[in-house]
Image (cartoon, rainbow, N blue to C red):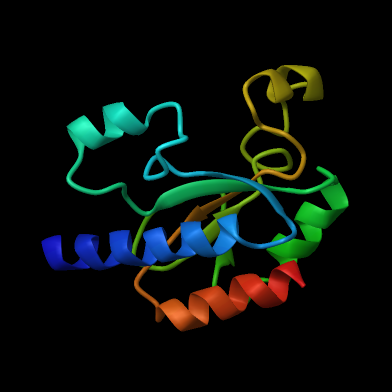
Length: 135
């Protein structure tokens, strides 16, 4: 529904800003940030910036990304993102695992990249889950 979409966009915005300010996060890829290369396109095509984002970790270590996604309790690790529940994915070991590392990295799929699909859960629960997973 439109109401659910609006709520997901509000949560996603808050999660994007939360991650951007986290000391262990290197970069947040979310079209709502004016620094995103497709910000203007997204702004012209969408009413808001959606419930999907990716982020990478400082140090870009595969084992750090594994630790984060395996520690999440509210975000469920999944191959396919989207739906009403919050989901996470680790492209380097899941959807892009068959692609050689050098090729993956050319497209931005680095070892520490984590994708999130923000669902309808309580925003404080989502932020707490990310905070404990990043700790």
